Amino acid sequence: MVGSKKNKPMKYSKIYFLSAMLLLLVMPVCGQQSGSAFEPNLSRTFTNPLWRGADPWIVKHDGMYYTCRGVGSGIEVTESRFLTRHERSRMVWFTPKEGWNRANIWAPELHPVNGKWYIYYAAGETRETPFIWQRTGVLESDTPLGTYRDLGLLYTGDDPRQRYENIWSIDMTVFTHKDQLYAVWSGWEHNSYTDATNQNLYIAPMPTPTTIGKRVLLSVPDQLWQMGEHIALEEGPAVIKHDGNVFIMFSTRGSWTIHYRLGQLRLRDADADPLDPKSWIKSGPVFLGDSKNVFGVGHASFTTSPDDKEWWIYYHSKVDTTSGWNRVARLQKFTFDADGNPFFGPAVLPDVPISRPSGEYELETAKQ
Image 1 (cartoon, rainbow, N blue to C red):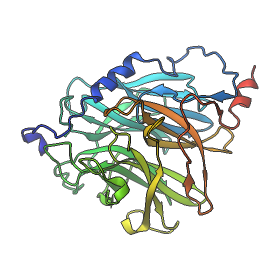
Image 2: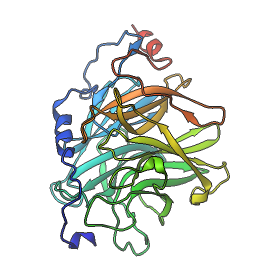
Image 3: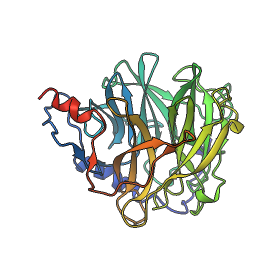
Image 4: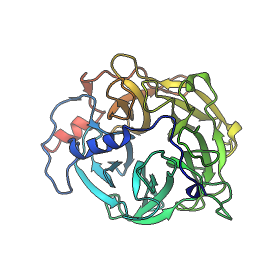
Protein backbone atom coordinates (compact mmCIF):
# COMPACT_ATOMS: atom_id res chain seq x y z
CA MET A 1 0.00 0.00 0.00
CA VAL A 2 1.12 3.53 -0.60
CA GLY A 3 0.53 4.25 3.09
CA SER A 4 3.64 2.29 3.98
CA LYS A 5 5.89 4.56 1.96
CA LYS A 6 7.58 7.75 3.03
CA ASN A 7 6.17 10.87 1.38
CA LYS A 8 8.28 12.86 -1.03
CA PRO A 9 7.69 16.61 -1.46
CA MET A 10 5.27 17.25 -4.32
CA LYS A 11 6.53 19.18 -7.32
CA TYR A 12 3.88 21.88 -7.00
CA SER A 13 2.25 22.09 -3.55
CA LYS A 14 -1.49 22.81 -3.43
CA ILE A 15 -0.93 25.59 -0.91
CA TYR A 16 -4.18 27.33 -1.67
CA PHE A 17 -6.46 24.41 -0.89
CA LEU A 18 -6.63 24.85 2.87
CA SER A 19 -7.11 28.61 2.57
CA ALA A 20 -9.98 28.01 0.16
CA MET A 21 -11.58 25.64 2.67
CA LEU A 22 -11.26 28.29 5.37
CA LEU A 23 -13.02 30.78 3.11
CA LEU A 24 -16.00 28.46 2.99
CA LEU A 25 -16.32 28.82 6.75
CA VAL A 26 -16.41 32.60 6.77
CA MET A 27 -18.10 33.62 3.54
CA PRO A 28 -21.89 33.90 3.30
CA VAL A 29 -23.71 31.27 1.25
CA CYS A 30 -27.10 31.10 -0.38
CA GLY A 31 -28.54 28.66 2.16
CA GLN A 32 -29.45 28.82 5.83
CA GLN A 33 -30.20 26.19 8.43
CA SER A 34 -33.33 24.06 8.12
CA GLY A 35 -36.46 25.92 9.09
CA SER A 36 -35.06 29.41 8.45
CA ALA A 37 -37.28 31.93 6.71
CA PHE A 38 -36.30 33.34 3.34
CA GLU A 39 -37.33 36.58 1.75
CA PRO A 40 -38.84 36.01 -1.70
CA ASN A 41 -36.79 37.05 -4.70
CA LEU A 42 -39.12 39.10 -6.88
CA SER A 43 -36.49 39.93 -9.48
CA ARG A 44 -36.67 38.35 -12.92
CA THR A 45 -32.87 38.20 -13.12
CA PHE A 46 -29.83 37.02 -11.16
CA THR A 47 -26.09 37.55 -11.49
CA ASN A 48 -22.98 35.41 -11.18
CA PRO A 49 -21.20 34.42 -9.07
CA LEU A 50 -23.68 32.71 -6.73
CA TRP A 51 -21.39 31.81 -3.83
CA ARG A 52 -17.78 31.19 -2.88
CA GLY A 53 -16.54 27.65 -3.17
CA ALA A 54 -15.78 24.92 -5.65
CA ASP A 55 -17.07 21.75 -7.31
CA PRO A 56 -20.77 22.72 -7.32
CA TRP A 57 -23.06 19.72 -7.53
CA ILE A 58 -26.81 19.89 -8.17
CA VAL A 59 -29.47 17.25 -8.75
CA LYS A 60 -33.18 17.71 -9.44
CA HIS A 61 -35.62 15.24 -7.90
CA ASP A 62 -39.43 15.42 -7.69
CA GLY A 63 -39.40 19.13 -8.51
CA MET A 64 -36.79 20.06 -5.89
CA TYR A 65 -33.13 20.98 -6.35
CA TYR A 66 -30.49 19.56 -4.03
CA THR A 67 -26.90 20.72 -3.86
CA CYS A 68 -24.01 19.10 -2.05
CA ARG A 69 -20.60 20.44 -1.06
CA GLY A 70 -17.81 20.04 1.44
CA VAL A 71 -17.83 22.72 4.16
CA GLY A 72 -15.00 22.70 6.68
CA SER A 73 -14.91 19.23 8.23
CA GLY A 74 -18.22 17.99 6.89
CA ILE A 75 -20.74 17.88 4.07
CA GLU A 76 -23.68 20.24 3.54
CA VAL A 77 -26.84 19.48 1.54
CA THR A 78 -29.29 22.18 0.47
CA GLU A 79 -32.86 21.98 -0.81
CA SER A 80 -34.80 24.49 -2.87
CA ARG A 81 -37.56 24.91 -5.43
CA PHE A 82 -35.19 27.29 -7.22
CA LEU A 83 -31.94 26.95 -9.12
CA THR A 84 -30.65 30.40 -8.21
CA ARG A 85 -30.92 30.23 -4.42
CA HIS A 86 -31.20 27.80 -1.53
CA GLU A 87 -34.19 27.58 0.80
CA ARG A 88 -32.97 25.04 3.33
CA SER A 89 -29.57 23.66 4.24
CA ARG A 90 -28.17 21.15 6.68
CA MET A 91 -24.81 19.74 7.61
CA VAL A 92 -25.58 16.06 7.09
CA TRP A 93 -22.24 14.48 8.00
CA PHE A 94 -19.02 15.33 9.80
CA THR A 95 -15.63 13.73 9.35
CA PRO A 96 -14.51 11.28 12.03
CA LYS A 97 -11.63 12.14 14.34
CA GLU A 98 -9.69 9.10 13.14
CA GLY A 99 -9.59 6.97 10.02
CA TRP A 100 -8.94 7.14 6.29
CA ASN A 101 -11.54 9.93 5.76
CA ARG A 102 -10.72 12.36 8.55
CA ALA A 103 -9.42 15.14 6.26
CA ASN A 104 -9.69 16.83 2.86
CA ILE A 105 -13.31 16.32 1.87
CA TRP A 106 -13.34 16.93 -1.88
CA ALA A 107 -16.19 17.21 -4.40
CA PRO A 108 -19.08 15.32 -2.76
CA GLU A 109 -21.97 14.35 -5.04
CA LEU A 110 -25.53 13.51 -3.99
CA HIS A 111 -27.47 10.86 -5.94
CA PRO A 112 -30.89 9.24 -5.47
CA VAL A 113 -30.65 5.50 -6.25
CA ASN A 114 -33.36 2.88 -5.64
CA GLY A 115 -35.21 4.91 -3.05
CA LYS A 116 -32.14 5.88 -1.00
CA TRP A 117 -29.80 8.86 -1.12
CA TYR A 118 -26.06 8.42 -1.52
CA ILE A 119 -23.17 10.85 -1.23
CA TYR A 120 -19.95 9.87 -3.02
CA TYR A 121 -16.95 11.88 -1.85
CA ALA A 122 -13.17 11.89 -1.75
CA ALA A 123 -11.22 12.21 1.47
CA GLY A 124 -7.79 11.49 2.93
CA GLU A 125 -6.15 10.56 6.19
CA THR A 126 -4.15 13.77 6.53
CA ARG A 127 -4.35 17.44 5.54
CA GLU A 128 -0.65 17.48 4.85
CA THR A 129 0.75 17.67 1.34
CA PRO A 130 1.34 15.89 -0.92
CA PHE A 131 -2.30 14.82 -1.38
CA ILE A 132 -1.54 11.18 -2.12
CA TRP A 133 -4.09 9.68 0.28
CA GLN A 134 -7.36 10.58 -1.44
CA ARG A 135 -9.79 7.68 -1.74
CA THR A 136 -13.56 7.50 -2.33
CA GLY A 137 -16.22 6.82 0.29
CA VAL A 138 -20.00 6.55 0.30
CA LEU A 139 -22.71 7.75 2.70
CA GLU A 140 -26.35 6.65 2.74
CA SER A 141 -29.57 8.26 3.98
CA ASP A 142 -33.29 7.67 3.62
CA THR A 143 -33.88 11.34 2.77
CA PRO A 144 -31.68 13.98 1.10
CA LEU A 145 -31.42 16.19 4.19
CA GLY A 146 -31.31 13.30 6.63
CA THR A 147 -28.46 12.06 8.78
CA TYR A 148 -26.13 10.00 6.64
CA ARG A 149 -24.65 6.64 7.56
CA ASP A 150 -20.99 6.14 6.73
CA LEU A 151 -20.81 2.95 4.63
CA GLY A 152 -17.06 3.14 4.33
CA LEU A 153 -14.42 3.07 1.65
CA LEU A 154 -15.15 2.09 -1.94
CA TYR A 155 -12.63 -0.08 -3.72
CA THR A 156 -11.23 1.63 -6.82
CA GLY A 157 -8.29 -0.65 -7.55
CA ASP A 158 -7.74 -3.36 -10.14
CA ASP A 159 -8.88 -6.46 -8.26
CA PRO A 160 -12.28 -6.06 -6.55
CA ARG A 161 -12.35 -9.75 -5.60
CA GLN A 162 -9.08 -9.63 -3.65
CA ARG A 163 -9.35 -5.88 -2.86
CA TYR A 164 -5.60 -5.64 -3.17
CA GLU A 165 -4.11 -2.14 -2.87
CA ASN A 166 -6.86 0.43 -3.19
CA ILE A 167 -5.82 3.17 -5.61
CA TRP A 168 -6.11 6.97 -5.41
CA SER A 169 -9.50 8.22 -6.61
CA ILE A 170 -11.58 11.42 -6.53
CA ASP A 171 -14.69 12.98 -8.10
CA MET A 172 -16.87 9.88 -8.35
CA THR A 173 -20.21 10.20 -10.14
CA VAL A 174 -22.80 7.53 -10.91
CA PHE A 175 -25.35 7.05 -13.66
CA THR A 176 -27.76 4.42 -14.97
CA HIS A 177 -27.81 3.15 -18.54
CA LYS A 178 -30.21 0.39 -19.60
CA ASP A 179 -30.94 -0.45 -15.96
CA GLN A 180 -27.25 -0.90 -15.11
CA LEU A 181 -25.63 1.42 -12.58
CA TYR A 182 -22.11 2.67 -13.39
CA ALA A 183 -19.47 4.64 -11.51
CA VAL A 184 -17.07 7.04 -13.22
CA TRP A 185 -14.19 8.73 -11.40
CA SER A 186 -10.79 10.34 -11.75
CA GLY A 187 -7.90 8.17 -10.63
CA TRP A 188 -4.29 7.14 -10.95
CA GLU A 189 -2.96 4.11 -12.76
CA HIS A 190 -0.84 3.32 -9.69
CA ASN A 191 -0.37 4.92 -6.29
CA SER A 192 2.43 7.44 -6.11
CA TYR A 193 4.67 9.38 -3.75
CA THR A 194 3.58 12.66 -5.33
CA ASP A 195 0.28 14.24 -6.29
CA ALA A 196 1.98 15.59 -9.40
CA THR A 197 0.64 12.42 -11.05
CA ASN A 198 -1.45 12.15 -14.20
CA GLN A 199 -5.18 11.53 -13.66
CA ASN A 200 -7.35 9.36 -15.92
CA LEU A 201 -11.07 8.62 -16.06
CA TYR A 202 -12.16 5.15 -15.00
CA ILE A 203 -15.55 3.44 -15.30
CA ALA A 204 -16.92 0.35 -13.57
CA PRO A 205 -20.26 -1.42 -13.17
CA MET A 206 -21.90 -1.14 -9.76
CA PRO A 207 -23.69 -4.28 -8.54
CA THR A 208 -25.15 -2.08 -5.79
CA PRO A 209 -24.86 1.66 -5.00
CA THR A 210 -22.15 0.79 -2.47
CA THR A 211 -20.05 -1.74 -4.40
CA ILE A 212 -17.89 -1.33 -7.50
CA GLY A 213 -16.86 -3.95 -10.05
CA LYS A 214 -13.61 -4.14 -11.97
CA ARG A 215 -12.44 -0.76 -13.15
CA VAL A 216 -11.87 -0.02 -16.85
CA LEU A 217 -9.57 2.74 -18.10
CA LEU A 218 -12.06 4.93 -19.93
CA SER A 219 -10.06 7.97 -21.05
CA VAL A 220 -6.59 9.49 -20.69
CA PRO A 221 -5.58 13.14 -21.21
CA ASP A 222 -3.90 12.63 -24.58
CA GLN A 223 -5.11 15.62 -26.62
CA LEU A 224 -3.16 18.84 -27.13
CA TRP A 225 -6.01 20.92 -25.67
CA GLN A 226 -5.64 18.93 -22.44
CA MET A 227 -1.93 19.57 -21.94
CA GLY A 228 0.18 22.44 -20.68
CA GLU A 229 0.77 21.92 -16.96
CA HIS A 230 3.26 19.67 -15.17
CA ILE A 231 0.62 16.94 -15.05
CA ALA A 232 -2.13 15.95 -17.49
CA LEU A 233 -5.49 15.24 -15.99
CA GLU A 234 -9.14 14.41 -16.51
CA GLU A 235 -11.41 14.88 -13.50
CA GLY A 236 -14.85 16.02 -12.34
CA PRO A 237 -16.94 13.73 -14.59
CA ALA A 238 -20.69 14.42 -14.78
CA VAL A 239 -23.32 12.83 -17.01
CA ILE A 240 -25.86 14.48 -19.33
CA LYS A 241 -28.65 12.44 -20.92
CA HIS A 242 -30.59 14.16 -23.71
CA ASP A 243 -32.68 12.85 -26.61
CA GLY A 244 -31.25 9.35 -26.27
CA ASN A 245 -27.65 10.56 -26.13
CA VAL A 246 -25.32 9.99 -23.18
CA PHE A 247 -22.44 12.38 -22.45
CA ILE A 248 -19.73 12.35 -19.81
CA MET A 249 -18.52 15.91 -19.38
CA PHE A 250 -15.17 16.26 -17.61
CA SER A 251 -12.63 18.89 -16.58
CA THR A 252 -9.07 19.04 -17.84
CA ARG A 253 -5.90 21.16 -17.56
CA GLY A 254 -4.84 22.38 -14.11
CA SER A 255 -7.69 23.33 -11.78
CA TRP A 256 -5.35 25.90 -10.18
CA THR A 257 -4.86 27.70 -13.51
CA ILE A 258 -6.90 29.93 -15.82
CA HIS A 259 -6.73 27.13 -18.42
CA TYR A 260 -9.15 24.77 -16.65
CA ARG A 261 -11.85 23.74 -19.13
CA LEU A 262 -14.45 21.15 -20.05
CA GLY A 263 -14.12 18.24 -22.45
CA GLN A 264 -16.71 15.72 -23.56
CA LEU A 265 -17.14 11.99 -24.07
CA ARG A 266 -20.16 10.97 -26.12
CA LEU A 267 -21.52 7.42 -26.23
CA ARG A 268 -21.57 6.43 -29.91
CA ASP A 269 -25.14 5.13 -29.75
CA ALA A 270 -27.65 3.87 -27.23
CA ASP A 271 -26.62 0.24 -27.79
CA ALA A 272 -22.89 0.83 -27.33
CA ASP A 273 -21.25 -0.75 -24.28
CA PRO A 274 -20.29 1.98 -21.77
CA LEU A 275 -17.50 -0.27 -20.46
CA ASP A 276 -15.76 -0.30 -23.85
CA PRO A 277 -13.56 2.80 -24.23
CA LYS A 278 -14.08 2.59 -28.00
CA SER A 279 -17.77 3.30 -27.42
CA TRP A 280 -16.96 6.88 -26.46
CA ILE A 281 -16.01 9.80 -28.72
CA LYS A 282 -13.86 12.50 -27.13
CA SER A 283 -14.08 16.16 -28.15
CA GLY A 284 -13.06 19.48 -26.71
CA PRO A 285 -12.60 21.90 -25.34
CA VAL A 286 -16.36 22.44 -25.16
CA PHE A 287 -16.45 25.18 -22.51
CA LEU A 288 -13.79 27.78 -21.73
CA GLY A 289 -13.28 30.90 -19.69
CA ASP A 290 -11.42 33.91 -21.02
CA SER A 291 -8.25 35.76 -20.07
CA LYS A 292 -9.93 38.92 -18.73
CA ASN A 293 -13.18 38.18 -16.92
CA VAL A 294 -13.94 34.51 -16.21
CA PHE A 295 -10.95 32.33 -15.38
CA GLY A 296 -10.56 28.58 -15.31
CA VAL A 297 -14.10 27.21 -15.66
CA GLY A 298 -14.78 23.61 -14.80
CA HIS A 299 -16.08 20.86 -12.52
CA ALA A 300 -19.66 21.26 -13.65
CA SER A 301 -23.00 19.59 -13.05
CA PHE A 302 -26.12 19.90 -15.18
CA THR A 303 -29.87 20.16 -14.69
CA THR A 304 -33.07 21.58 -16.14
CA SER A 305 -35.17 24.62 -15.25
CA PRO A 306 -38.18 24.26 -12.92
CA ASP A 307 -40.49 23.80 -15.91
CA ASP A 308 -37.97 21.50 -17.71
CA LYS A 309 -37.88 23.78 -20.76
CA GLU A 310 -34.22 24.80 -20.38
CA TRP A 311 -30.87 23.19 -19.56
CA TRP A 312 -28.44 24.84 -17.14
CA ILE A 313 -24.78 24.28 -16.29
CA TYR A 314 -23.67 24.76 -12.67
CA TYR A 315 -19.88 25.24 -12.57
CA HIS A 316 -17.05 27.01 -10.83
CA SER A 317 -14.37 29.45 -11.92
CA LYS A 318 -11.33 31.06 -10.35
CA VAL A 319 -11.69 34.52 -8.84
CA ASP A 320 -8.49 35.82 -10.50
CA THR A 321 -5.48 34.80 -12.56
CA THR A 322 -3.32 33.87 -9.57
CA SER A 323 -2.37 30.21 -9.34
CA GLY A 324 -4.52 28.58 -6.67
CA TRP A 325 -7.92 27.31 -5.63
CA ASN A 326 -9.89 30.45 -4.71
CA ARG A 327 -13.12 29.81 -6.64
CA VAL A 328 -16.79 30.74 -6.99
CA ALA A 329 -19.91 28.95 -8.25
CA ARG A 330 -21.74 30.07 -11.38
CA LEU A 331 -24.86 29.18 -13.33
CA GLN A 332 -25.85 29.69 -16.97
CA LYS A 333 -28.20 28.33 -19.61
CA PHE A 334 -27.04 26.12 -22.48
CA THR A 335 -28.58 24.43 -25.51
CA PHE A 336 -27.86 21.51 -27.87
CA ASP A 337 -26.53 21.86 -31.41
CA ALA A 338 -27.81 20.22 -34.61
CA ASP A 339 -25.72 17.11 -33.91
CA GLY A 340 -27.15 16.77 -30.41
CA ASN A 341 -24.04 17.93 -28.55
CA PRO A 342 -24.27 20.36 -25.63
CA PHE A 343 -23.49 23.91 -26.72
CA PHE A 344 -22.43 26.17 -23.86
CA GLY A 345 -21.29 29.34 -25.62
CA PRO A 346 -19.01 31.79 -23.79
CA ALA A 347 -18.99 32.04 -20.00
CA VAL A 348 -21.35 34.81 -18.89
CA LEU A 349 -19.49 37.80 -17.46
CA PRO A 350 -19.64 38.55 -13.72
CA ASP A 351 -22.45 40.81 -12.47
CA VAL A 352 -24.29 40.76 -15.82
CA PRO A 353 -28.05 40.27 -15.29
CA ILE A 354 -29.23 36.85 -16.46
CA SER A 355 -32.87 35.86 -16.85
CA ARG A 356 -33.85 33.42 -14.14
CA PRO A 357 -34.41 29.81 -15.23
CA SER A 358 -37.70 29.27 -17.04
CA GLY A 359 -40.60 28.92 -14.64
CA GLU A 360 -38.65 30.04 -11.56
CA TYR A 361 -40.04 33.57 -11.29
CA GLU A 362 -43.59 32.32 -11.89
CA LEU A 363 -43.14 29.60 -9.27
CA GLU A 364 -42.04 32.11 -6.70
CA THR A 365 -44.57 34.85 -7.39
CA ALA A 366 -47.52 32.47 -7.68
CA LYS A 367 -47.69 32.24 -3.89
CA GLN A 368 -47.22 35.94 -3.17
